[in-house]
Structures are given as structure tokens and as C-alpha cells.
Image 1 (cartoon, rainbow, N blue to C red):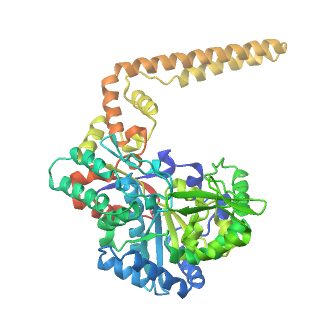
Image 2 (image 1 turned 180 degrees about the vertical axis):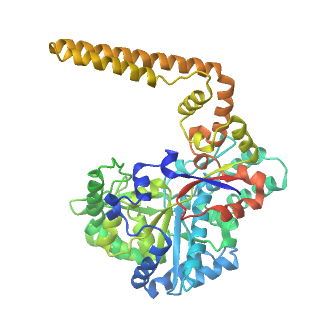
Image 3 (image 1 turned 90 degrees about the vertical axis):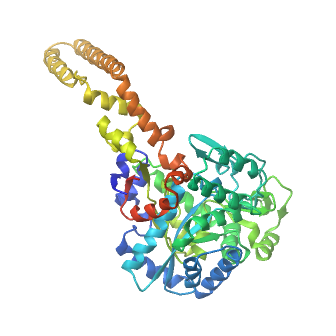
Length: 533
């Protein structure tokens, strides 16, 4: 797949915080540990190795083997699980929600970035082993965010009532979803494979966690990917001291609040992604996932009658740690405690909230991972590339907002000069003489000159807009073809990867799709990729 690259900043789809992070701006250096380049991994490996115990590795491997009991994993994956016992083995981790049928395309880019970074690290550091991890967000509860995927511009949606952690949801109603989806597919080999994949995942498993385990394993097991379910009683045992600290000392609230204040005071006009609560834990049991709150020494589960004293809730933690679920503030801490992890790979929004967490990691004496922006990709077919060439526009032009795109193209191809800059410059020159004359009289005359200048400049701008509008009408057929192409590649005037599902491309490319991505995605390159397929 031939590839073109566009700097993330020039796409206009990434926040100033993420762009400044990628540029390694000095003012945000204190919010991360090390910038992700191959050389910096040496120190990260040493720091993590010195802090991660063999006992933790033993628990991790035992839990993973238990989680994989009913999964037909590849030899590569099983070997990677065993390697985690070795003090020279480390992980690279990405995570995502349990979106129906993987949800948006970028799910694939996250995992491929993770797999490919492990390969690059092995080449650079042959004495160490690197295991790609997909962390399933089984404890999330926002069902509306995950209960659909887009196919050919339409939602394929799973409608049902839901409560509690999404990973524990049974799969009632997905037979209907399967029928709706299958009816939109033809009978080609790739279409039949898609139907079988959906059916095996969602109609033959007991809950959403098991369905997602199966699905991701089927897609990526050949590359040694290890899937982790953090909603695990043995892994939660390792988290007990941090749960206790969160309940009693509310350490994360204090540290993340201070970090947010520091970010707010910088000149970058950065958006705060998440705000901490006093207690950043949920209580989860069957069909229940609610916040834990503390009022005057009494601990409560919101919207329930469950209450504890301090000693009672600490006993509950000791006896049933699996019932305590970290929120977005605490989940990264939990992940880094149980994994020998070097780097987290995520999207722009994820990295933005990770950048708020470093001070809390330091307070907890937990190594903060390196943060890598996942690969972002626009997949473009040969036919679409031909259209670009005929229309004499670049893919980079298509990243513009639609009206800006039409304006740029109109000004470029119009036989009339729509830019009135020279006329404005002439007008300003003429008024310069009037201002000199005004200096010789009273202030009221200078005000009249200024008002007249503004009026005439505005008049020129209005004429420029009218001329542009007229030219757009004249070129409407040509512009419509450009808009149609942009809508194909940027559905909903947003990034392709945030809207489309892998199934549309799998129909065309089948089992070749993932190998093509593995071949071309370079996780450390740090640019937006345009891939011809």
C-alpha cells in the first residue's frame, strides 16, 4: 500500500495539547515521563524492570491463563503469556471499549500500532521481549457508546435495556442485529466470513466480554496479541492497597486537581479532558455499577441503600476487591500496577487525560508509561485516487472543512481573480494620506476618516464574498464532485476512522486487510497516513 503522510497539526483534527505534545513543547514536559522514541525506551525498560516484581508477574500469568481457558489462542499468543514470567519481558498496551463488532476503524489502528511497536522494539532491544496487549474495558457502563457500528452510512444497533458493567451483559437481542446485518451482505466469500465471525462471536457466547475476547482473538491472535480483562478477582488483589488509599486518603483527587490547575494556567488554551472526584471508584455487582461516595465518614454506593463505616468498607475491599472498579482516573493506575508496561497507545482524547495523571502516579510510586498517539489513517481506493487526480486536488485538501474546501478550489480554478487584497492595499494607501491630513485638524475628523475606511473595506469584503458566491454557483457541478469525494472519504465531515467499520473494507479485501495494515503502519513515525488500498 503506497502511503502519503500529513503532519497531525496540519489535519486540524487534533487538539492543541496533542499537537504541542508531539512537538515536544517545553511547557508540557512535566506532564509526561519520556517521549516515545526508540532510544528513550532503554531508560523506560530499566525503570520498569526495577519496580515490577516477580510475584506480580506470577499473578498476572496465572490470571491470563485462566482467562484463556476457553479461547483457541495461537501458539504466538500462548508463548507471549508464558514470556510474561520473564523479568526481561515487557508489554505495550492499548485499550478500548467493547464496541459492537469492534465499532470504528481506529480500533484496528490501535491494535496494529501496538503489535508493530513491539516488533520495532524487539529489533532495537533483542535481549528483551515485548508483548502486545489489548485491554478490554469490560467494567465500563456506558452502553449507548458501544451498542452500534456504522455500515454503509447506517447504524447497525443493538437495542436493549442495560445496567451494570457492560462486559457482564448477556447477548439477548443480538440475533435480530445479526439478521439485520446479514441481510445487507451479499454471498461472496468475504461476506460469508463476516457473517460467520459475527455469529460465532455474538450468538455463541454468554456475555459481551466473552464475545469480544473471541472476536479480537480471531482477528489478531496470529500476531501474538494478548487480551486482558481487568475485571478479575486475582488481578484486583494486586490493586487492594491503592483502593484503600483512594477510599481513605483520596490521593488521586488532590494530585489530578493540581495537575489540571497547572494545565489551565499554561498559555496553550488546553482543554481539561477529565475531572477527578473525591473517590474515583465504582462498586460493581450483578446489574450494578455505581459511584462510591463518602459523607462525614460514612461510605455509600450512590442510588442504593448500601452503606459502610470506614472499617466495614476496608473489610469489603479485603474480602471482595473485584467489587471495586476504577473510573477513568484510576483505571490507568490499575493497568500499570498489574502489567510490566512500557508504553500506552491511544487516541488524542485518551492521551490528553493521561497527561493529567503523571503527578498521581508519582505520589503512588508507580512508573508512568510512555504515551504514544496511535496511527491515524485514511484508506483510499485506486478509483478514489483517480478522482483526486482528475479533480486536481490533494488528499490534504480534503481535510479542510467543506465550505473552506469549496472556497479554496474556487479561488484556484476560477478565471477571475477573487482575491481583493490588492484593492484593499490601494484603499489603505489612499486613507494613509487622509490620516496625515487629519493630524493637522481636530480628532473628530480623524474619527470620520477611520469610520469611512472601515465602511469601504467592509464594502470590498462584501463584494469579494458576492463574487466568490457567484463563482461557486458557476462551478457548482465541479464542486459537487469534490464534495461527493470528500463525503466518501470523510463521512459526516469527520475522519473516516471515527465513522466507518472494518467490515466495509473486509468485504473487498478479506483476510488481506490486517496484513496490509501491519505492513504499512509505522507507530513511531508521528504523522497521519493516507494509504492506497
